Image (tube, rainbow, N blue to C red; front, side, top):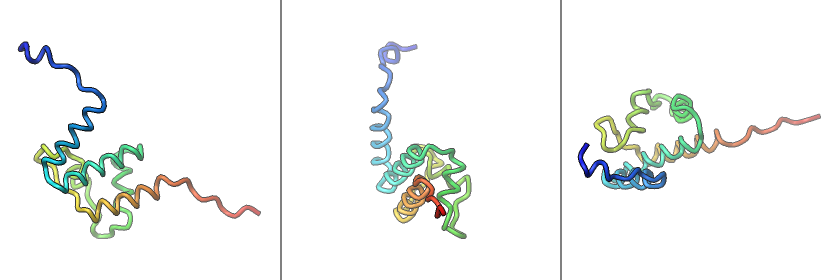
Length: 109
């Protein structure tokens, strides 16, 4: 192991977010949309499959495949990365907000 590698300090929890934001900014304006999508999925606390199902609701024939979803969730520095359109980010924000709401109670008699 080289001396420079030995002196490297571990990343702080907040620094990874900063690194992700910097990568997103370097990859172009749409990469920020992808980071926001990743943040929404993390905040929702569901599996990637459930997040994809929630995201696809209401998209009809424009629904995304598992492979497309992975490309949207990929790091901007990877070849798999695909930018997320702002309209789809707005759709995701609405879909995930609906999913995060507590269920409404029925009429009690």
